Amino acid sequence: MTKRKLKIALIGAGNIMKTRHLPALTADANMFEITGIVDLIGTRSKDVAMKWNIPNFVSNGDNVNFAG
Image 1 (tube, one colour):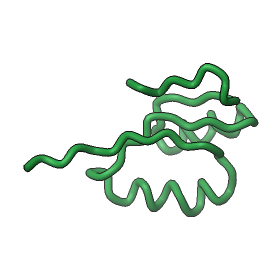
Image 2: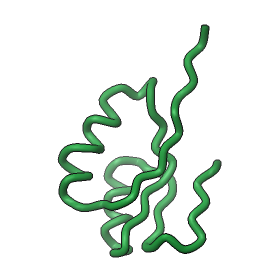
Image 3: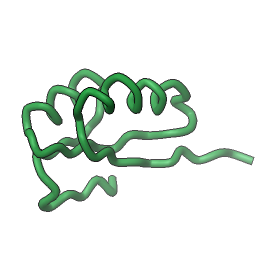
């Protein structure tokens, strides 16, 4: 039986996300696929997306669609 990755979008790009959640979620690349990240501070979500190879980012909750 083939396992499918769970696609997830992340809310918040602060210190806890960067130091705890992202390392844990990316430790097993076969389990999760991070499709996007959103943060109220646009530069923060962009920086985290670039560093962690997250394909989508936005600076607020408006028009979020990471369904890809």
